[in-house]
Image (cartoon, rainbow, N blue to C red; front, side, top):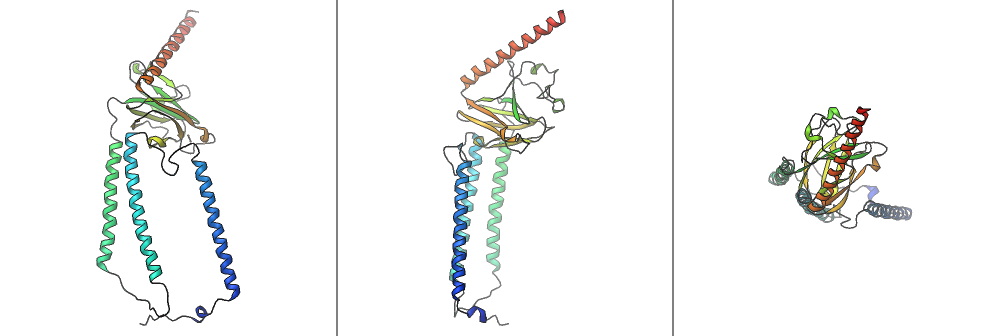
Length: 311
Ligand code: CUA
């Protein structure tokens, strides 16, 4: 078979003046389009980054121990991909330029090289296997059982907001059952469990830093999502389930916002709750105040009900 390159008559025709004009026009349109896309990209990315003041082009600063490990794997994959991207595109461009169509140069056809095929298939396979093992182990570590000294907080998502329930003076959170969740019993508290009698609720999540926090997550209506980018945490709240495996340790104080990350209805945009990470002393003070308030409210309720009974 003869693969000799035979230029067609049309290709040899020199560019006419109107052809050249058309090319210039297309090039200008293309340039305009690229400029427009760049402008859109720049203005939108700054709009998205508005609530943040630093690290605008990357993930927000991390505040948790587990988050540092997630960042490590993310950075590793990013740099690995970047190196591969530059290498592949570099070779591609070199070949494009070096073997471009030129008069007097004939195309060369070959049927591949088995050794090369094996090498460039095995290297990515090994890399992907390594990454799969590495990330799987990290996943298992981050989803291991929470430490025994973890502070348990019940988080209940609803259309459109968040409620938090803390263990009372006994330090133990009362049992919850999702079947019991209703408008009156927002967390599905089991009434017969004595440990739940002194629990109190809050509309903000206040936690001490340096202490493991274990959240018990449930939803009263549709799927919501517990999302805190600064903690590298993302967990859906699913109706009918109590998700108990999420735990994290925040390393330094700060004020954050818990924002739902599943499109859950018309009020989704406004489904937020403040998260305050404070020192242990500050937390103890807040906690004591809350326990006290809960006890007072309960005493008032009891005396009111005995009054009603007396009448
Ligand atoms: Cu809840 Cu979006």
